[in-house]
Amino acid sequence: MNDLIIIGGGPAGLTAAIYAIRKRLNVMLISKDLGGKTNYRLSLPWIEDYQVIRGLEFVSKFRNELEYLEYARHLDGVESVTHADKVFTVKTQDGKEFKSKALIMASGAKQVRLNVPGEKEYTMKGVCYSALSYAPLFLDKKAVVIGNDELALRSVGELATVAKHVTLITDGDGQFTTDLGKKIRSAKNVTILDKHRVVEMKGDIYARTVVVKDSAGTIHEISADGTFVEMALTPNTKMLGDLVKLDERGRIIVDNANRTSLPGIFAAGDVTNTYAEQVLVAIGEGAKAALSAYDYLLPSL
Image (cartoon, rainbow, N blue to C red; front, side):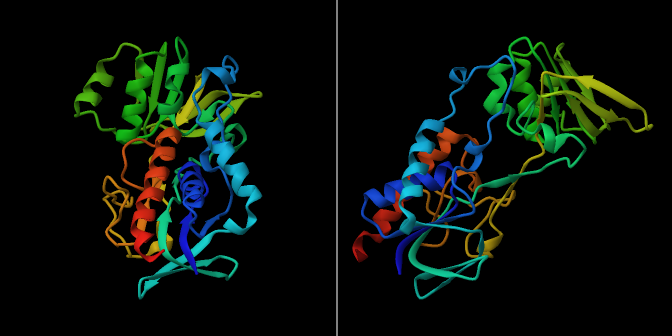
């Protein structure tokens, strides 16, 4: 039986795994891949790699270590997690079972996609799902944000501080009664297209144009240097069932030591209710979760 199982191979999971290994824990990381969101980087024609703080160097180092330590990883998706007599059982999609005394959930969250022609082709080639990560690069550029909720408004608000122009496309009426919403409504460099729906993305080697349809069925084309789909995140928590408490958005609730409502389960990264879905934040949260899990396990080691 393992001391610790970590579910998820993104920045939080990889960091937690390396910290756990260096604490001499018998650890198993289970994930479909290694790297998570760092496997996807937005390409923009005017940007060089040195201009972006990615945290990629840290994650790549940890990933390389895990690729070498085959005994500490199992590359597959997780089907379910059960808990009985202080033992966690993790069943993977290939039918294997792994047991441990403690568990770290670092399974991340899925981006909600539009599923329109051109979106998949131009993903990370002018089309992205995190304006907050790339907004500073849009100085004097034109950007499009697609979404209805607080995440979309926040993305528009941040882009509008640096971009030449930002177009917000919503298929509803948006949430413009908040202070941020009112600010966006009055911003001179923001255009809001209410009750519009994206039907296609066009371009060459990069996405250049967003095609939208209004409520009357009229087609419009909007040129953009970058397009951000900000339609919230879906946390990957299904495999947990009702083992831990979730917030109203389905994220795992953690305290400042990354402990969940069930002793022995810890969580880190985008799957939690921690502020900001950023790589560097996830790295720190992964380290905290591993240290917290080690403290929990120490009496039994």
